[in-house]
Length: 235
Image 1 (spheres, rainbow, N blue to C red):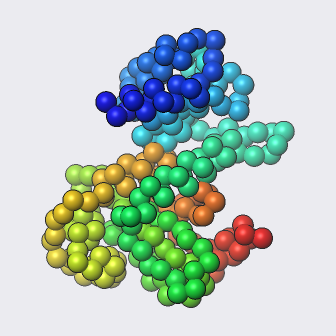
Image 2 (cartoon, helix red, strand yellow):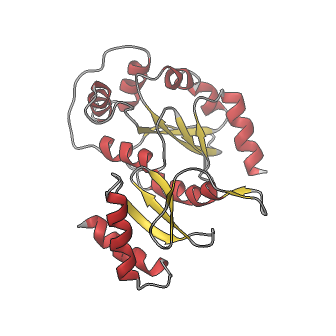
């Protein structure tokens, strides 16, 4: 019921030739037939199209509800990626909603906060984590979100739950990234919800870095390159 109530709120954002109450069920039905759950619908900056945020990322749909578009749309006039402009705000808001359940490695002299979707079985996630001292020294606070690449039925999902439920989650995560066994633990946690959030951003691999302005950097970035990207964005 939560999904439908959210769609009802978003109805005010949809302005087409049909009544909003008629549009939303149509969009939801069309997307459900291809295995996608609609989170929100709104007018797009692309004429004749709707932007539809789903549990698997951003899609576009023709206003006649016949055509669904997956992939990047580039604005030739303004030389911008339409998808990225939309998703930046969605990512910024989305990660903040989970700030009370992240595993945070805080910089003493904090200048930037980045969110990182991570998986303990990911080699490049371990490589990034090994540079935590350099990141913190540069004023970068890292807030980890769980993203078990194998899904919620995987062994990694179970391990991430144990980490998030550990008395010292930071140490448990560090141990796991160093190949050490993590003591099994259970509690109420948001690992599944964090994973679903990443999927809704279109993330499929790790590490996936969300910068303060909502930009997504897919994959590993050396600490020096990340600092340069953050500094450039701030200037």
